[in-house]
Length: 221
Image 1 (cartoon, rainbow, N blue to C red):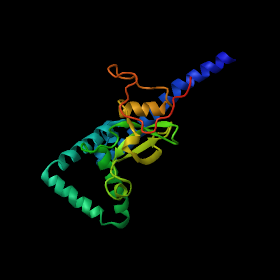
Image 2 (image 1 turned 45 degrees about the vertical axis):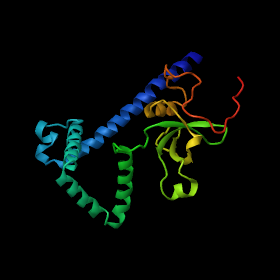
Image 3 (image 1 turned 90 degrees about the vertical axis):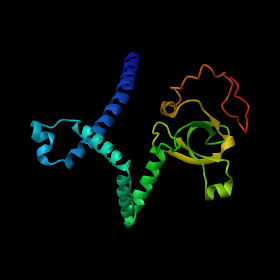
Image 4 (image 1 turned 180 degrees about the vertical axis):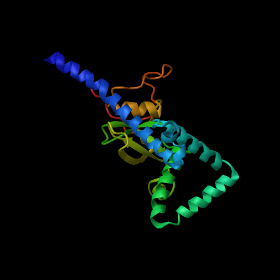
């Protein structure tokens, strides 16, 4: 009985991540296939080949994104996009949604942005615990005026759903920078600490990237 249970658990560990990955990929392909609706009916795969070609929308989606990027990169395109942005910003309900989404996308995907570029350790949820967080920036206006300039904004993802989490503003001195990449940090969080990234060989075992402003005694082993 224990052998069957072990086999069953091992099978789940194989199929659950594989199934979720395939489901996400199928969802993305289906979403991109919706771009085919932009084409005239006589140019769609059903009319051209007599059957639906899965994934053809991916090529069309990439072409639309690249064409939009090429348009936005020149002077005329920037003027046109600015006019569209101003128009959307004047519509009462649309401007709230569009403005928030645009601000987030500009922060996350802008080459000059610093959001989610590095991982740090912070004390959370209490002074005796540590967790891995992603730096999203630094307060500059009202928050900085109230609590000081030496603060950092961090996002603490939850396990195993890293799309949810907590936003914190903590003193910069209370964080310890990590050498691991953001991707490695997310894998570490999703795996609940099982998939810990390897330490760099040229980094001494006890040489931390930062200092702990509130050192606590190490637990006895």
